[in-house]
Length: 355
Image (cartoon, rainbow, N blue to C red):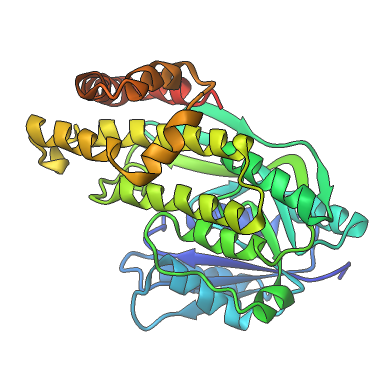
């Protein structure tokens, strides 16, 4: 086999429709020195059986059957414990990857042996018939970061482009993760960004690839972005606060960083407004307006408000009513966006993707 070895950890839970495609993407990699660790998280569909069959067909595939369901973070951590590669990737079993992913990572590491390699992605928005309505390519310029100053400057830009928060568009040096005792925490929706924030506090070098190597399937039903979560906005406020605290710790909490964080806050605020209109929220009109007033009074909102200057047209419109703290204006925008999202999801995806 060629070059360094890569470990790929893939949690498996209720993905019998998608699992074989993702595994075939791994098996078809142009770079051959890899191991695939399938972590069956007590699926009650045929996923576990498929894992065993795939393992019997390919000696580089091994299966861990967990005794009880522990969630995504636990599955990744269990896979990391038994991984033997020099670098580790955490891929989702219901997405797909380009056949050149590992080779591109390997080529970058020959130039600079960084602790983290980040690659671009393609967001694929699927309708209820599982047909792709819209694609959004997300990537950055190729860069090799070897100083804290460059890393501090780039991390917030990656978060703005939505490239930072995911675990599956990165390869991590395994020995470094273990040395720093980095594990995934069980925090719904934001476990990846929490992991990555802890990681970059200790990182000395990052490679950023311009190649869009990961295909993220965003389905109309079934993933966390479409499920209703009572604490959706609270989780993303925590996300923004994480970056505020990180940059304060680094000593780089400047106007640029605050402006980007204000834009991200605005984006999640708009998303929460339309989610509050979902019947599953069981919120009355009075409760929706109270929720908006409470947001206006929060400490983080007060700190970010002077820096609110979004570059997205939809966000610019929202920023007008936010700056004026117009409760009725925000409430109406939430209702309108909810209608657009549910009746014309393709249009909604295009509206929000001007990043």
